[in-house]
Image (cartoon, rainbow, N blue to C red; front, top):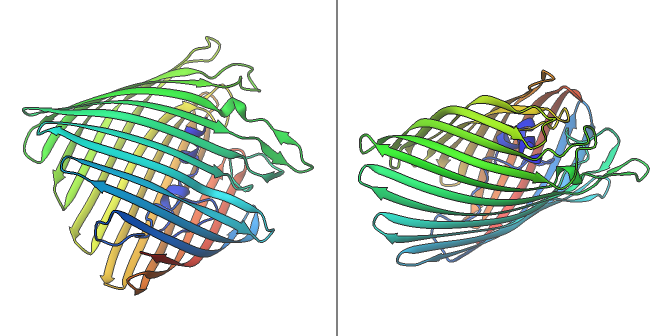
Length: 396
C-alpha cells in the first residue's frame, strides 16, 4: 500500500528547498510567487542535478518545473486552483514525470461560527528506477496516479470547536518494467479508500486548546497480494487526544497521542494495533525566520513483508532565513523508522541538506542545494546518497 511508502523514504520529505531532485519532492519549496496576492500567478523553473549513490552510482538529470496558480477571493469565500509539475530527463535520455498535479480548494464562511471547505487533488508521477521500494533489475519505475476529494464542516459552539471531515481516495499503481522487458503487475497495490474524521476541541484560554480526534477509514484493493494470495482490505481506527497552542503570527504548535487499530477483512491475516504520536510546530520569531517541525505515525499493510503490518515514524524539520531582500538561506533534516511488526524487520534512515536562493531581480531567482541521505533497508541494505542541484526560476 503506497500510503506507507513515504515513511520508508523520508528524505523525500526532508529534502532542501529549490529542488533537490532524483525522485525527491522538496519540503521547503522555493517561493514561486510574489508576496502580493494576485488572481493569477505563474513560474517556470529549470534545474540541473548530480547524484552519487553508493548502490546506484552516479546519475545526472535536467528538470523543468512549470506552475500556474489561480486565486479567487470573495466577501465570504476563497477558491484556489494550482496546476504544475516536474519533468526530468536523465543521462540515458529517459524522460520521467517526477510530479504532475492539479489541486483545488474552496472555503466558505457561512456565518461567524460556521465554515465549510472542499478540496480535490489529482497527481501523477513515475518512480525512479533506483527507488528503494522497487525490485532489483528495474529499468523503468511504475506510474502512480492518486486522486482525492474531501469535504469538511467546522462549527464553533462557545468554547468548543467541532470539525467533521469526509475523504475519498483512488490510487492506481502501474506496472514495473524489468531488464529484458518483463513487466511486474502492481494492481495489488491499487486501492479505493474512504474515511471519516471527527475532531472536538475545547478552548482553555485564547491560545491553548485541548482536543480529541477520531478517524475511521476503509481500504479496498484491486487484486490479491501475489505472495499471500489474499486481499489486504482492511479498516483502520484511530483515536487521539492532544493539546494545541496558537500565538498568531509567531507560534503554532500541536501534539497528540493515541491508539490505532488495523483490522483486516480476511481472517487469515492477523489484526494489529499500535500507539501513535503526532505533532507539528511552526515558529516565526520575525519576518525573516521560519522554523517548521513535524512528527507523524502511520499504520498500514507492509511494503516489506506481504501479509504483515508496518508502523512508521517520521520526523522532519526545516528552516528558512532571509538574510536580505535578495538572499535566502535554507536547511532541512529528517529521520524515519519503519517497523514490520510480525517479521521484526526495521528500515530506517536520515537526511540533512542546505540550500540558498539568490534573487537577481523580482522575477528571477537562482538556487543551489545539497542533500545527503542515508537509508538502511532490510531488503536493499545500506545506501548513502549525495545530491547537488542548481537552477533558476522565472516567475510573474
